[in-house]
Length: 260
Image (cartoon, rainbow, N blue to C red; front, side):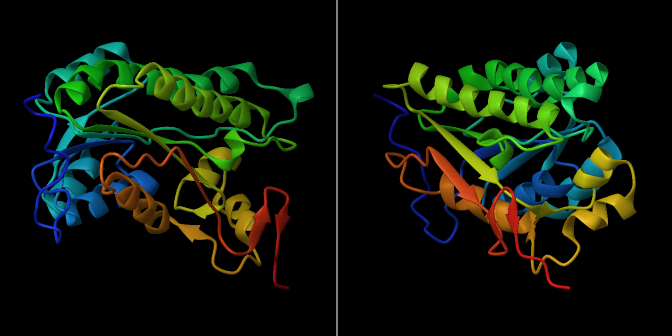
C-alpha cells in the first residue's frame, strides 16, 4: 500500500528524519527532555503544554514548534490537533500527581484533577490525533505511565488509580489497533527526580527533596527520554509493549537503598 513503507529515514545517523513527533506536557521534566532528545534524533517536534512562554523558549532552542495545549480542555485539544498537519509519533506525557493522602482522607477534587489530566486528557489527545497517526502509515503512540500503574502503595491511591488507568488504556488500544500500522508503546518509570513532580504533589521543595534523600543517582528526565527515543526508533515491526525503568537503587516500589 502507498505510504506504508516509510517508517524511518535511510540515514541511520538521524533515525527520526522526515518524521513528526508530538510531545504533550513538554514545558518541563520528562516532556521537555523527550522533546529535546527526539529533536536531536532528527524528528520534527511539536511541543504542547499550557505554559506557552516556557514552551516557546524550549522549542526555539531545539528547533521545534510550540503550540499551547491543555489536555483537560476539549476545545484546546481540538485546536491543537487542527494545527498539526502530520503526526508519526505521539508521546502522551502530560500528567501529574497532586496529593499523597490515604484513602480515608481522600480529597475528591484532587482525585478528579488527577484522573482528568492523566487519563481523560490522554484519551482526548490520542483520539484527536489517531487519524493522523493512522495516515502516517507507521505511527507510534507512546504512553508515559509509571510503576505506580503496575503496583499500589500507601498514600498514593489517587495517582496509582490514574496510572493504572493509563496502563489499561495502552493495553486496550493495542488490542483495538491490532493489524493496523500503529504501534502502542508504554514507558513506566520508577523514581525520577525532576524539578516539579514531587513538589507539585507534596506542596514544597523541602518535602520533595525528602523523597530522594540518600538515594544514590535517582533517574533524571533525560534517562526516560533516552528510553522513549530508543523505543520509537526500533524497526516498525518491533513493538515495545511495556518498558519498566528504575534507578539501580530502587529494586521495587517499596525497596529503595538509601545512604546515610
